Length: 179
Length: 185
Image 1: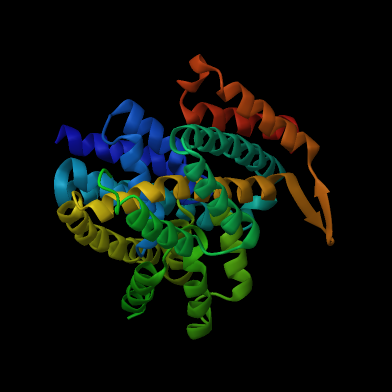
Image 2: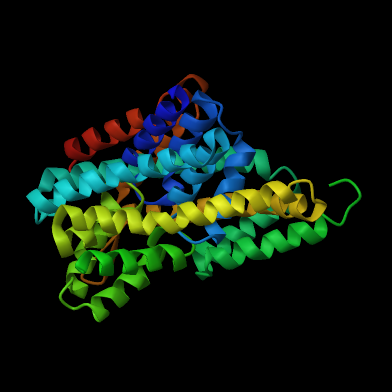
């Protein structure tokens, strides 16, 4: 029961503090899941993200289901999934019912602009940590750079990039005696 | 009947939208064409703006918003849970497949190739959010927001100091909100 409650609270927190979609929740996820509770390692978190990227559904929800399942089976998965979606539901219903032109209120727009900058910096710090950990060889640094350029500058769908490097990894690393 | 239709449409969106973020958008556009009485394209654009700037995964926010627009609070609940149900079911299946293949050399190699790639993908997502925050386009003229960019650099620098890395991200978000109001961002 305690674990289920912890899962629920953590994912409600993550859902509340995720601004700007799936990847923006990585700093919060790392903090709550890896640092605070030790429910997954940095590597496992990346695996969940990669899998969430190529499977149907919202990435944040997929990741929640994954972590919940690992800790407490189908029930844990349900608790984590509902937890991550619940804040959205409540916040949006409040906004939609009381404020028809919510973003036109000047101070709210300014506050959100500031929040976005803070979130950008959090993502940048997370990426920098990931880069130091994962771009440990020239090949890996190259892979990271190529996927960045493909998605950010060329506009290729992340799904193709994910699939391409999964196949590459399976052929290149998987073909060696010591993987 | 409306609830059933909502459940069906959002289940479909949840099942076929692959890749997160705004991946649900094409399905919502299709919904507005198939059910003109639900919401118009203009209303959809407003929903995106609010969904992107409020907490929570964008796809889930959009479903809550659209569902509320169609049938009030019950509509929001039906749409949101219909959207996340396919994720839940698909991941439960995948987790079993991954477990049975975990020791496979090819699968392990594939995941190893994915780690640096996902790093690049997250960097790309961060870059697009940063770009939207520091470059504002008004009447077709792009303007670089120096203040926003400097603030970003300050936040980033502060976060590199070891003791400050232990601080909860919520603290930075709260400081960002306060500074946003104080500096008229």
